[in-house]
Each structure stands twice: as structure tokens, then as C-alpha cells.
Image 1 (cartoon, helix red, strand yellow):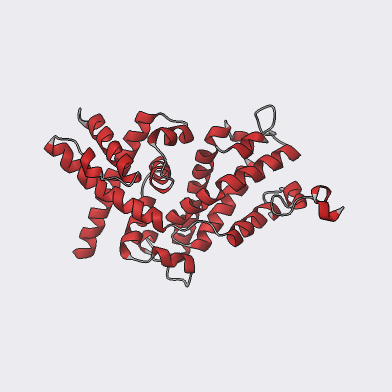
Image 2: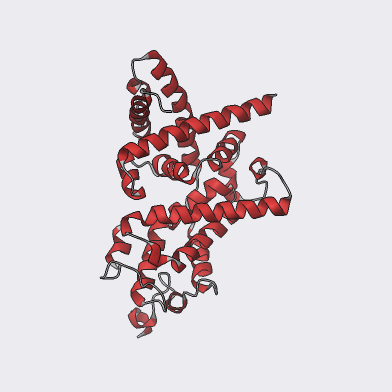
Length: 101
Length: 192
């Protein structure tokens, strides 16, 4: 059963997260009500940890990206024969490669 | 959804349903891959905590996406659709890992392989948080990922997920509350 404060908490938390994502001090967006303030602040500790984790999460490297594409395009289960044939997008078909003409 | 995949989507607005793939389908799919593979991989990495397994999940997700492309309702929800497929692939792989390892709780496993990408995840805190994220529902994981990892505003998250702003705020609140509880339980378990 949701409490009547629930939407207020959700909105307050969302505002704090917006500030966190913008690199601003989220504490300024905390609600004035002490109980709400305490709860949202404790959730913002988790939000900060998530942001740190996101910053550490590596992006996909090109070699791995190409390897995944090869796996997808040549898989018998996928049967993406045309993609395997054209080898899109890393090796365009011969008819649009000027060097092949 | 970005413009590339949308630009080469079939003129009818729908994928070919069954039968042999069309050139348009393959172009659409390669565009979709270009635009979303990084997000899908990062999402899988957060769930799997292992670069090779994240690659397996990503490849599996795109294969399944290709095979069920006629189920995609609109271009705007393509990323949510892919993340859902990736979630199911990750959960399936985690289950099979658990069966192979014979462990009750695979979440406690740490990846100790010599994987350079896993070095950035070094540290107990990151591992605990990732283990907690795994325990969220698929919907909660997707909101957390798009909001904190992609840095999207809640209205943009709602658009990506085909939801509305109020619902996203509610899911976000429940997700953080659940994460806090899981982390507290984990902390008590560690210190007990």
C-alpha cells in the first residue's frame, strides 16, 4: 500500500537525481520535511554509487564490437545470410567500393 | 531511437514478418546494431560482471532480436526491446552458470579472470552494487541503466521504454529503495 507521501518522495528523489546527473549539489533539492528529507538523502547515497559505477563501466571496444558482429552475422542460428554476404557495416559490398571498380 | 536505423526502416513501417530477409531488413538491422550495441553491451556487463560473458549475452541478444524482428512494435522502443532481450539472455546465462557451478547463489561469485576490462570494476563496492542490480526486476534495471548509465532525463527514459514520466519516477524510486535494502542486507551479512 503506497503512502500518500509516495508521489512527493518520487518527485523529490527525481529532482535530486537530475541535479546529480547535471553535476550540481543535489542537497539543495532535498525536500524541507525532515522525514522526507532523510529518506531521499539515504536513497541519494545509492544514486551516487550508481553514478560512480556508471563512470567506471567501460564502453565497447572496436575489436569486440566487430567480433560480436561477426558472431551475429555468421551464426547458423541467426541465418542472417545477407548480412554475412555483405559484411555490413564494416566491409561494404564490392559494388559500392570505388577501389574495387 | 537514432536516425540511422529509423531512416532505413521499411517504408511500410514494419519488418518483414517471416521468410527470407530483405535488403532493407539487413540494412535496418546493421543500423540498429551500430546505434545500440554499446548500450546493450554495457547493460550486459553490469549484469554479468565479465567482459566475455557480456559479449556472449550481447551476441545472443542481437541474434534473438534478428529472429524476432517482426515483434518490434515501433522504432522508438527498439532500445527497450533490445534491453529486455539482453536481460532474458543474461538471466538464462546466469542460470546455466549456476547449474554448472552447482552454487546456490551465483551473485556471490567474483570474476577473477585476467580480464583487463574487469579491472575498472575492481573493488568490493562495485561488485556488491552490481550483484544488487541483478536482483532488480527487468523494468527496474532498465530504468536504472537508462537514467544513471545513459544519463537520460526521466521523460526521455519514459519515451525509450514506451512508458510515462510518472511511472518511470515510481519505478526509479522503488529500484533505489530495493537497492538500498539489498546493500544493507549484504553489509549486515558481511559484518555478521
